Every structure is written in structure tokens, then in C-alpha cells.
Image (tube, rainbow, N blue to C red; front, side, top):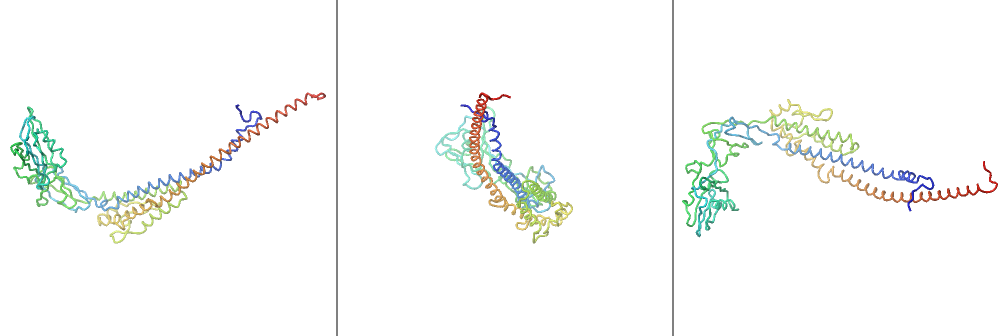
Length: 449
């Protein structure tokens, strides 16, 4: 049987129940609003954590002396020589001559038909030694006859290959040559080929392709620095001038190339500006969060106090102990500004002192900021303790809302049952009333108006 509450009595049962349930749901809605508030705070803490992580990354990069001890390196002829300088490079200029480039030892066989085979007798073998150490020897078993392409594959596929690459160059008329190339340049990686069994040097006819007249030492690069001649096995030389890497591009015998190593003041200024920018960005994030979901939160005040504590405690035992000495000051609005003229003056007067002010391993400003931020962000630290507390509160609210939802379902069912019964009762009473009225009206003597 289909029933519709209120049809018989005229009572709007659904409306009555809905209004009562709206009152019953007010505590639930209060819990939901509180959960929304906690979730908004949790999101704000995520923003704060992101801002602190960005600040920490910036401070970590600036807590190294390398961020400030940057050098510019240049040469008078980059077609011949290119140069780069690390933080340990000394200032100065040098006359460098590139007399000879380092080369990879190459050997080529005689020309053979692509169907020609080599070896095939017991004990036949080829051995390729790299450098002077017999341990760096590749032994190729040729007791089974092999073509040049087979020999190439045996060399390249051997897992114990000490540093040689084989290729086959195809010529005219189906003829080929085997080319051996050392994987590393210089005389120390030169190849020595020997044979076993019935094979000999004449079998392949391997000859050095490099134009060195048989003198393997000429595979090394040769340069002179201010008249001092040195040789190296590679064209990238980083152990002749401290902190300086020379990349040889072209030999130009007898001609000096000027190498100049200077301090890169612009790069140092960029590092200092990056410090100020990171500080200001963090302050801006804190201000925005204070005006939002973390308005009354003590965490932001704790962070600001930590930052100011470092700012008010200068470094020690350095040429410069205060940021203001190199042109960094805190303005009325709390932001940090950089006075370029004062910074340039400090850099020119005591470059290493500026670097030490930021990157000293114990008292540098960037070092201390990075360490403090790490404490805030570490597991169980300031931020974690706040977010863990919020997560716990949100979970508790969700449990309470679940229980309240179940109770509200029961209340609504009870209301519907009660008011449906009332609806039925009123309907019955109304039917009885109509019947009595009808009966009374039909009695003799009933007057009619």
C-alpha cells in the first residue's frame, strides 16, 4: 500500500520533520565548520612548510664558500683553448701554448676480402694490451677461423675488454679493413698487439694510423704554461694550474694564448641578493598566512623570533661580523635591502670576508639559517607537531560526525514514525467528526439556518 504522510489529515509531515531535523543537525554543522577550519589551517601549514623548504634550499646553496668564491676565466683565443675556474683558483694571468693535442691510438689492418678468414688452427690467438700493464690485456681465441667482422665482434663483446673498440671499414670491391681504437687518449692507453699459434704480425698487418712516426709518447698533449712544458694524456687538463681546467681545442705551436682568472663580482653580488630575496620571500609568506588561516597561531611568531635571533647575533672571528657592514639592512617594514655600493666596496676590500660572513661553517648567516630551518622541518619538529595535532583533531571530528550522522538517521526515522501516527490519528478524528456532524444534522427537529 502506498501512503503519503499528511494526505489524510492535511498535516505537512515532511515539512515538520525537515524543520525539526534542521534543528537537530546544527551540532553536526558546527562540527563540519570546525573541520573545515582545521583543514584550512592544515593547508596553510602546507604553504608554510613549502615556504620554509624554499628558504632552506636557498640557504643551503649559500652556505657554501663556492657560492661566493666565483671566478671568471677567459682566454685570448677560444678556438685554441677554453678555460674554467673553480673556487680554489688563484687570481692571475698565464701564457699558455698548445703545442700538441692528445690523440687516441689507432691501428688499421691491411685490406682483405670480406670473405677472408683468419686463424683456424689450435693455439691461434690475438692479444691486445692497453698501456704497459699486462693485466690490461684482451685475448681473442682464433682457433676457429674468423672473418674481420667476426674478429670485430669478439673484441667488442668481450666483457673483459680493457679499453679498445674495433670497427670494420668497407671499401671497394667487397674489401675491408679492421680498425682498432683505444678508448682513452694518450700514450698510457696505447695498444700493443701480439699473436699466438700460427698467426703473426703479418697476418693482419696492423699499423699505427696516428702521424707520430712510431713515437707513442706523441699521443700525449703537450702544453707550456709561462714557459714550463708539461704533457698530459687528455685534452682536458685540470692539474696544472690549481682550480683551473684547460680544455685544449686546437694545437697552435709556438703561439701564446693569454689566460686570465678574475673574481666574478657580479656572481658574488647575485648570491648576496639571492640571500636577501629568500629572506624577504619567507617574510612575505609569513605575513600572508598571518592575515589568513594562521592569524592567531603562535608558530609564525616562533619562526619570526628564530630569524630575528640569528639576525641579532653576529658572526665572530671574521673580517665582517654584521650584515650591515656589507650593505644589507632591515627596513622599517621588516624586509631586507641590499645597498650595492657598500656591497661592492666590501667585496673589493675583502672578498673572502664577505663569503665567510655567509658561509662560515659555524657562524655564517646562511649556515645558521639553514640549520635552524632544518630543525623546524625535521620529523617531529615544529611544523610536524602542529600538523600532527591538526590531523588528530580532524580524525576525531570525522569520527564524531559519523556517529552523529547515524544518530540523526535514527531520529529522523522516529520523527517520521511519530508524525505519521499523528497524521493517521488526526485523519481518523476528522472522519469521526464528519460522521457525527452528518448524523446530528439528520435528526428530526434539527433546525436549519
